[in-house]
Amino acid sequence: MARRIDVIGADGVRLAAWEFGDPPKADPEGLAVDDPAGRPFVPAQAYRRDTEEPPDPALAVPGPGGSAHPPTRLGGTQVPPRGSAPDPGGGSAPHTPVSQPPPGTGRGGGVLLLHGLMGRASHWASTARWLSERHRAVALDQRGHGQSEKPPQAAYTREAYVDDAEAAVEQLGLAPAVVIGHAMGALTAWQLAARRPDLVRGVIICDMRASALGAASQREWEDWFKAWPIPFATLADVRKWFGEDDPWVERPNPARGAFYAEVMHEGADGWRPVFDPGQMLASRETWVYDAHWEELAQVRCPALVVRGLDGELGRAEAQEMVRVLPHGQYAEVADAGHLVHYDQPDSWRTAIEPFLDAVLTG
Image 1: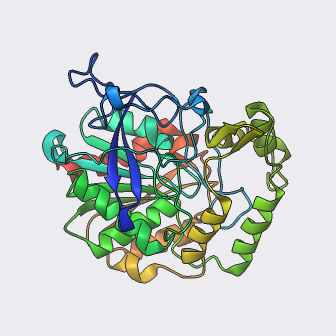
Image 2: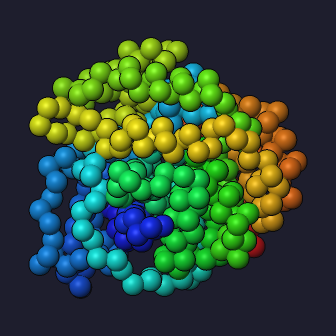
């Protein structure tokens, strides 16, 4: 079950934030029902049932989350998860911005979870659920993703993503928060920590490189998007293509196929991504050509760099990132790829929980 809270990001873009956990049996306020992965939920403070929009039929398929980024071969990002829950894709349904909830420190501290490129908040569902046993954990659908707005003319820049994360921490009352990011979301996390140390008490960087990836990597992504056989007739076709038939797949990977099924929604002609590939390329273009070591060095709070042994972040670069961070720590997760928290959720928890305990409750 999940609760939705609306956040107003940079330039007024509406963002969907989600708390995953066991909600109350009944909602005394009669609030509306919705869910990023297609399951009904009681939003924290959204709009009331008497003004509720009809449910989107694209939300019919439930499923857990993973996290995301491009193919195994593509520099800096890859993608494998499980479950398959489509999303309405538009992400721009009118929701009334909510009043600020209680500060995240009420149960030991607040945690903001940021997915990677092409991801969605529900990819953090399993992590957010165990976190919610002791802390307030909120996952954000970043602009252009999930159920957040995807305005064609909006900025898809590094600054916009960091501004949105800043707005989320402030409006959700999470400060000072631990920000956990995967891939592109991890870059946003450490850039926010560098810019606003008053808002961030700790950062977890999951499989994101600080070095520049370059033009060749961006061209690979452009070619890869062109190779997608859109629209897909069924979700089974989505799973098969991304898990087996995608020319960027080195070996069959059912989890990767399941991830893409989760970020598809059904239209009149078949299944398409909930995001605009052009917006994804525009988002990536604003960080792929640059190195980000300087901002990493400006992160003054405790920071944990986590990599999967088979992920995109190499050991040497990860250890150099730890060295550059003023208060850096390092963790590896065996038998995990780029989607560390999804590939090995138990080992992921073992890797990050001591850090979280020290930062949030120590």
